Length: 432
Length: 102
Image (tube, rainbow over all chains, first blue to last red; front, side):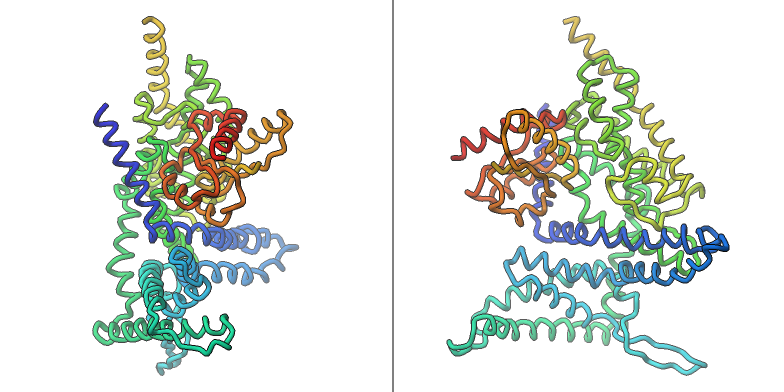
């Protein structure tokens, strides 16, 4: 048991460290705040598919053909939520970090936003009849999901720098005592703000002069793209799912622990899929939030719904059957806690193997289904809490539902031998 | 008495909340019981008399205890009570915490 204790202490410490880390925690909070906008943005595309499209939507019926006219409105919602994502994330992260640093939140959010815009391209080159013309404007590549990592890094640096600068008394502008405090405060932030923006703007300019690329493009190439690759790689994502389940085995919310790295990458993947479809290409990024909800954790992380079904089918333990009955309905909505803590599954050696590996298996099945072309990567994201079947249908269509059902069936088969094992253990206990 | 529960998204905990409300009603007690996402605890400081954490966020207890300070007792709900949705047991647990805290 010494090993189990060490292992469980170790993971508990990791969980605590991840949670207490200011930056990881702020990133997690930031994406939690922005997630509804992602869902809305991707649902706007769903409306296009079912309403305004002349091939798949209601608009193919003559009477409803006027619906095609509102397609631009849905596209506008999508653009406004997906394509300016980094600007929004930078602003929210700046505010969240400011709260942790006990600084003015709105101010830090805005400084982060302006600082980010100082380092990205601010013009576009337009070619008309062979003549190049430079137009002022922010290219989408600088403000959409490709900027997420540089945006988060820069925001952390900017808020820390600003917090440091504003703590120096010498940088404060001395106001006569008659000046109202509010006015004095806004002036006091002026010099630190100026210094912060000078540093980012000059730093960004030096970077462009030295490397001939903008820093957002550079960080995307050397950091974000490789991480995205790793995240989309079957082994990479299965490893993340496995780690998440190890935490669950201790009763710690694994999804919460991996979310600082999972959420930015999953959201960037969705954005890439949407961009591909809008250019008339096939979406290629398999692992999105929708993929996670529909195929990694259907019926609860660790496919606990399958354990519930397996127990209802073949468990001889009254307590297991009772908890399975009460946990069934939450399980249909993806809530695993009743069975995780009620059975309980925490450090339960009998079910440890399927509980940690079932979601790894289902991840593999989902990826396989995409790989053979049975389903395509999603452009409509599915939030947590949508019931089984419907979640798969929204994200991946009818074939998605089939894949989800296959996963649940195989998951149940995976759990059944362990339910038998639990039966045998009970028998042996009683024989003693 | 104001009992606040916190978990990962406030979803599974809200199941327990309704069970606790039921138990409180049966006992003729008029309590305010609600669930939030654990990241929002800071915004609710001072609004609750006791804070119960879901066992899946047990690793945040030390941080949360520091955050809440002397304002209210903080404890992790017993996993089995949580999983089985034993509203009465958790309600009693909350009452005991408040008694001990005062």
